[in-house]
Length: 170
Image 1 (tube, rainbow, N blue to C red):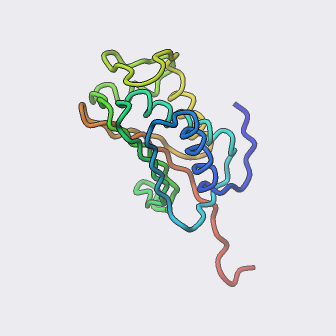
Image 2 (cartoon, rainbow, N blue to C red):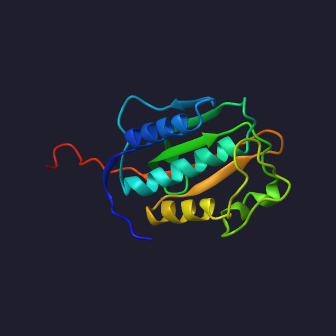
């Protein structure tokens, strides 16, 4: 997996690929919430777009056709490392995942049994989330999922922010 990293505005990448999914699924409601200030990361924009697209296409596939999908870009405190990171969350109103499945979804070729496609194509290899996790971890970020059966799922990833130089240390 080759990365071509550069300083990127995560707002622009997120907005662009939400727009792409809106074109692909024009009958679906995809809401985007993000701050006005730019969230700068050092990343491969094409690979980050691949992760956003994967999360969004899964959310659309596994939630009812009338249910909205919410995408949130924000900065949050990374409790484990004690610094601020960028986080993208994709939240759906699908069937959700049982607790025992939530870690397994990141495995190669793993597909959750008894979770039916709600909208669109059911064809999948079980590689999208594994590839997404690999991409994000190669960027120094983390992935995860919050889910409860019959209450939808929120898949998320974090990326380190570009460090701003200290004032007066030019």
